[in-house]
Image (cartoon, rainbow, N blue to C red; front, side):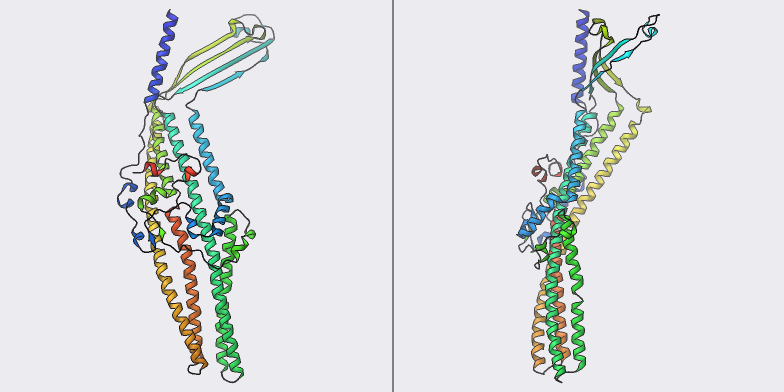
Length: 494
C-alpha cells in the first residue's frame, strides 16, 4: 500500500509541474511599443507627394511591373525570379531559418536515447565486492533513457517565439530580395531601351548634320560659301558623333546587368532587348496608396518589426536563466554477464527529476538579461529608422518623378520650338536671307534639345522603377504566395 501511495504522490507532483509549465512564462510579452514611429498618426497619413496629378490614391497592385503592359519585361522578371543568384541566397537563408525554428520546437518534446555496449573482458572483483579474481567473459550494458525538460518558466516557449520571429524576418528578407530584383531588372531594361532611344536620336542628329555638311561643302565648291563654313559644319558633325560611344557603352552595360540578373553570363544578354529603342513607361497615373498601406507593404519594415519581436522574446530566454532547470527522466536497462542476460537480477531502472540551478548572484543570467534588453532597445531604434527611411524614400521618389515629368514637358515644348526654328533658319539660309552660322546654330540647338529630351525620357523610366521599389511593390501577401505563415508588421503593427 505504501508503494502505491508513493507512486500516486509522484504522479501528483508531475501533474503539478506540468500545470506550472503550462501557465508560467517569464519575460515581456511582445507588442509593438506605443512610442514606436509606426504608431504615429503622421506616419499613417496620406503621402504628401501623392496629391499631385501623376498619382492616384488607389492601392498599389502586386506585380507592379505589369502596369507597363510590356511582355518582354514580364518575361525578364519571370526569368530573374527563377534564376537570380541573390534570390537563391535569400531562399537558402529562409530555409535555414525554418530549420532553426524546427530545432527550437524539438526542445519541447521528450528526448529518447538508446545505448548498448557489449564487450569481452574481465571485471575487477573488488569493484563489486568480490575478493577473488573473476573469469574472462562476455559483458553487456544497455539503457533506454527518456528525458523531458519541464518548461516551467517558459524558456523554451520564448526560444520558439524568437525563432519563429526570426523565420518571419527571413521571409520578409526574401520578399525584399524579390522586390529589389524586380526593380533592378526593370531599371536595367529601361536603361537598355533608353540608351537605344538616345542612340536613335543621336544618330538622326548625326545624319542631319552629315547632310548639312554635304550641302555646305557643295556650296563652298560652287563658290557660294567660304571655307570656314565647311570647317564649322564638320566640327559640329564630329561633336555629334562623339555622343554615340558613351550611349553605346551605356546600352551594353545595361544588357550585361540584365543577363546577370536573369542568371546568365554577361555575353548571353537577351538579343531582343539589344534592339529596343522605346523606353518602358507607365502612361497612366501611378497608384500609391497611403502611409499605413506603405508600411504594411514594405518588406524591410516587416523585417525590422519581426527582428524586434525576436529580440523581445530573447529577454524571456535570458530571464529564465534565473530559475532552476528541471528535467523529468526515466531509464531502463540491464547490465551483467552475457550468460545472465535477461535474469531478473540484471535489470535496472531510474525515475525522477533532475534539477540544475546556478545561484543568480553567481551566474551570468543577469548579464544575459541586460544584453537581451539592450538588443531589444537597438532593434526598436532600428525599426523606427527603417520606418522613417521608408517614408522619406517614398516622398522623395514621388517628388523626383513629378518634377522630372514637369521638366520633360518643358523640354518637349522646347524641342518643338527648336525644330520650328531650325526649319525657318534653313529656308532663310537657302533663300540667302541669313548667314550660314545662324542656320548652323539653329541645327545645333535642335540637336541639343533632342538630346536633352531623350535623356529626360530615360530618367523618367529610371525614376518610375525607383518609385515602385520605394513603394514596396505589393509584397504584403508574399508569404501567402510562398505557402508560409505571415504574422509580420501587417498583423502586429498598430
